[in-house]
Image 1 (cartoon, helix red, strand yellow):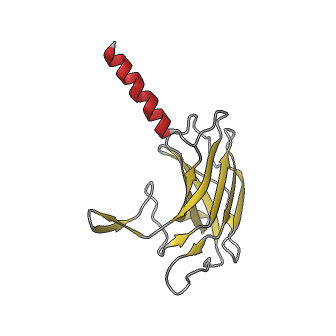
Image 2 (cartoon, rainbow, N blue to C red):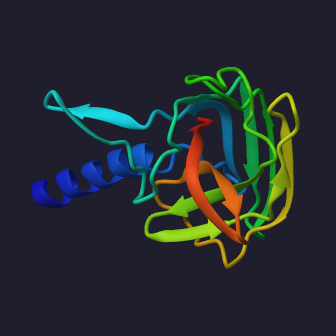
Amino acid sequence: MKKLFISAAVGALATGFILPAMAADGRIEFRGGIGSTPFASVNGVPAANDVRGIAPGGRPWVIDKLRAAIRSDGSISVKGEGLLLAGGNSVSLPALPRQVVATLFCGATELNSPAADLDADGNFAIRGMLQGALPSPCVAPTLLIRNFTASAPGAWFAAGIPEN
């Protein structure tokens, strides 16, 4: 009985940490964003700052505002402001012309949004349906804003902060 109680408690805690972005109605929301940096430090050694196997953009990026909502039917709405380069000779510019796409990861499942234009101020709005079925529940939701070229998503520039 004690083992069963401990297992149930650990499962409840894990669910609380894994699914913080899911609302009671199955929506997944993100409010705020984190810009990418090309490298991270792992035990003092520079390493690629990959997220879910996706490489970051070649320079640091910042994002001023990010808000995203994904409904259980797979519809997605993302609004971003101020997605700009944070280093190099193009600092404070959005590196135009460019399109971006939102990629939602639910565990090992990767779902992409339609592409949207990035304007001269680094603003974009994505609306449409994710390509593929949204798992229920969406385990460990992660949202990346990625470069979109040659009809395929590329490097990531920003990540969404899950809404609790």
